[in-house]
Structure formats: structure tokens, C-alpha cells
Image (tube, rainbow, N blue to C red; front, side):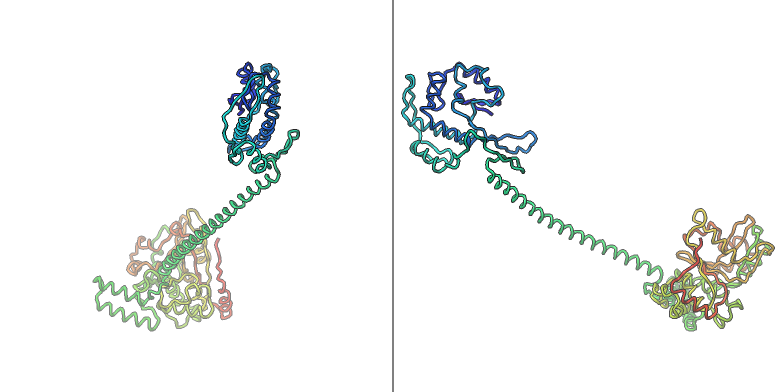
Length: 579
């Protein structure tokens, strides 16, 4: 903004100031800016100012240099950063030039700044007041017959606000107390300006700029220090929260794992809830309480159980014999849909009792397999004088095999203990027990499906090859010398006693299930056995869809050297995999 020295009106640009001077003041008389003297032409007014107001004119020029800081807002700095620019009023003559009646609009400069510069700071305004007050103290003479009179007011320092009695005292005060502010470069040389690289502020002195920049750096350093402290605290808090969350997650995972582990322990009989004996007594008591067993029957069965446990031989109460012979008769006289059938050697069926219901299938299948081997003279050497052991005795025999060094990994998984527990056993434990008895066998692992819809046709083919040495030229019913096959899958195990080959070339396994009670198995012993009775034995390809199956197939008898070799090989258990 530009201010007219004549009337004080402010305009926004130099062209506006030119127009204002031309329109408002060209035809008016020239007035002294210091004492308001008028009635003279431009040259006379210049002479008046030079003679009567020389000191005031020089002082005002000094004040103008000090206080010509113009604050402007850069177009591309929307945060209203203040910038400083020095502008100096070149002379008092130019301040009066606009009032001369002979000056036309064409005589004003078109590309340079106006000679009539405005005083923009409050300090300059105060300086004018001081000059006017000083002028009023002087008794000026008349110029061309005009005399002016003023009313006196104490002068006030434009820098510190101090009030003196007269203008001379004020001038001495300014020169002594504020001489550094009046010591400015000469008008003939431009003062160098220094831009602050951080905020754009323009300084006239390098040392001032350095102090100004140091303040920026101190503020920045202080702010960065606060930020670093806050960041450190945030990181520490985040670390603590993360540690707390990790501890909570680990605790939840540990509890979940413990719960699953306990569930597995209960499922596999490792929860220290007792073994065969405890479960047998507990279930018989339940039957008595429900009225399904007479107390006398309870005591009789308890006595038989205690006797069986004492001698280690199964009491035979869950056994069904003669089924293979009954199947041979049936296939000879019926089953017209069957092209050929292969049966294992004679085998007894054992089902679960009150003492092992829910966990004893592996033990019962071993009893079935052993019942077949005991009938085969080829195994008399290794099984001589042996009877079908009860379940606790089988557990003891497996523990003895572990003590010999068989399957240390499996022993570790079961805590080297089976007696007094309801721990499940699988193909590995059956293999370990048979090998410790010098029965030659091996495990075949059908670890994934080999047919559509999750079926295992390769399993059926393998069993067919096991039982049949020659397919063509054989009778319809073949009673082989092969023992039954131990069949294991997730959660259950069964015994394969034969295989059918149908006229449509499909295969069907004949399976003994320890979960089938004796009353159902005894229906197979009838002379007039019907095909519907075989439904519980027959398993087609579409009936076996578990993800994985393992079989234990008996092949003969081991020598002492072979037994030692297999014991050494069982340190890292391996099995034949198909496919």
C-alpha cells in the first residue's frame, strides 16, 4: 500500500498514486510537509525546505531507511510468511514534486518507483510527530509574507517512547541512545540483503541472519528432541503391548494345546483313568445299577476276570470259532454272483468286552491273527506252548519288546507304558510284537488314494495278490495257507480273512470287525446261512474311503539273526509305501 504525503490517502499501486496526484493535487497549491507553509511555487518550496528544515529532512531520511520494512505475502507461500524489503525515500524534494502545479502526468516516471514514497512504519509516524513538534518550537520567519503558528507538544522518542521537554533534548537523546539505528549506509550504495533459507525473512546484516538461523536450528533441535523422546516412548509402549499380546496368544495357544493333548490322551487311553480291569469293573457296576445284570452274575464275571488276568490268558468269552469253515460251505453251495473266493487259514473272531470297549480293537485283531498262527504248524517253533493272551498280557508283551530295543520312537510316544492304561495300539505295535516273537511280517502303507472319490483299488489288488498265487485254473473256493491280514486306518482296525472276485471282475474284501458282537457273528455258523448275513463281512472298493490304510502281513518265521537285524532296523521305522 502507498500513502500520499500530501493528504495521507492510501492507494494500492504506483499507477493509482500517479492518477491521485494528477487529479487531486496538480491544481492545488504546494504545502510544506513540515510546517504546512503554502502560497509559493515548487522551486520556492524546495528552497524553503532546504533552508528551514534541513535537519528535520536528514533525520526523516534516516528514520525512513531504518523503518522501511514492508511485509508482503508471497503468492506461493500460503502460510503468510513475512518478508522484509528496504525502501528509502530518496529526497524531500521528490516528496514535494507531486505538489508542483507545473508537473504534468507525462512528466512522471513510467517504469520507476514514485518519487513520493509513503512512510510505512509506526516508528516513521512517530518520527514525523517528533519533527513537527520540533518545528513548532522554532520561530520561523515569513516566506513571501506567510507566517505559521503551531501549538507546542512535548516530543516523544520514536524508538523507546521517552518524552523530552524540547526537541533539542529529544535530538540529543536519539543521537546518543539510538545512534546505532541511525548509522545506516549511504544512499549512494545499496545495502546487501540476506534471505533466511528456512523462512524467507530478509535481513540487512549477516550476523543478524546467523542469529536468526541459529534460533531456527535450536527450535528444530528442541522439536526433534521432543519427537525422539515421544517416538521412543511410543516404541516402548508398542513393544510392551506386543509383548503382552504375544504372552496372551502363547497362553491361549498353550491352553488350547493342553486341552487338545488331554483330549487325545483321553481318546487314546493315556489319561491315567485306569486300564482294562478298572473299566471292566466300572461297566459291570453300571449294568447292575441299571438292572441289566444280576449281582451274582457280576461277582461271577469278576472272579473269572481276576483269574484270567492272573494267568494272562483270555477267558474266551468274546470268541467265535468256525466261521472260515462256514464260509467255505456257503461259497461252495451258493453265491452264484461270485466268480472266485480266497480264504485265509482258520481264524477265531474276538470282539470287544466291557473292559476294552472303545479302545481295544488293536488288541482284539492281534488275538485274531495269533489264533490263526497257532493253528499253523509252520509257526510252532516261535509260538510253541503259547495261548491267546488277555489284553493286559498283550500290553505286557509289547512293553517287553520295547525293553529289547524294538521301536524306541513308538515306545517314547506311549511313555514306555501300556499296562494299566487304555492306550490304543496300531500297525507299528503289532509289527513290533510279532517281530519280537520271531514272526516274519512287514508293513505296507497305502498313504493316499489311488482311485476316484478317495478309494483305494491298489489295496484290493495287493490283498488279491497276497492270497492268490494263480488265478486261472483254480477252484471257486480256495482255502489258502495264508494267515489273515491286520488292517489299520484312522481310529479303528480290522482283520482281512479273504477276498471275493465277482463275475463282473470287481473285488470285495471279507473282514472281521472286533466291533461286531458274538451274536451277529454266530449267525454265520448256521447251515442255512443267507447272503444277507455276509453283509457285515463284505467291503467293496467304495466302502473303504479313509485317507490312509496300513496293513501288517505275515510271511513266515524269522531266524535269530534276522530278528536282531529287524530290531536294529526298527530304530528308524520304515514301511513299504504304495503308491
